[in-house]
Length: 315
View (cartoon, rainbow, N blue to C red):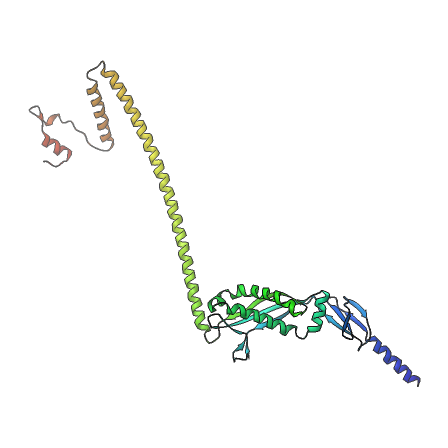
């Protein structure tokens, strides 16, 4: 009889010990008593009522979880197509697979909602993300989806999930969405790759043409600037020379007028001065000058001989 008493006491102690629980440093706990939440303790050792009365659910609030959504080549959907194969706005199929990173919220409401729906969180989140991706794909052509999907689709999915998850009361916060795959179906993948390669080549050539255009425009602008500078310099030089020639001429004219008043041979003197300058210029240019006195015949100038002298054709 005493042994039975000790055994019952031992069993009672073990049963009461089931009310002791440990919460890890990255966890929060939700304590439910007969289904009603009575406490949400943080990390550390906790004490509650024994098993059958209290239920303690430990929630890893600091752990980031990840799920893959969309295309699964080995999983066949209702219509006989792989799961995640979506229809574009121009009635083409495209394979889309997303990666969703999420964490459990740390507010009391998030903890309660997660504990209640934890078995359905991944499935519900996957369906919501796939629905958002299907909406984005259906509003675009297959070319648009393939070209811009990796950049634009994650932001679209994040916005849609941000609007819809509060209504689902899953107690989670989506941290990141990324595109793991967006491609044409395998049956036509090679054709789309050829088209994409051709478009890439076209874009490369267009870029090269634009670069060459810019280079030539730059060269033309530099040449235009150089020619404008040279023209301006030549203009300034010619203007200065013209001004100098005009000033010299005015000085000579004034001097001639002064001399002409007292010397009747002033005009002849001026003519001989100009003749000497002309001859000097011819000599400086490498020309040859000779006197033409011996071409005088009977007091007159033999024009035919003069033409021969200057190398001009006779008339």
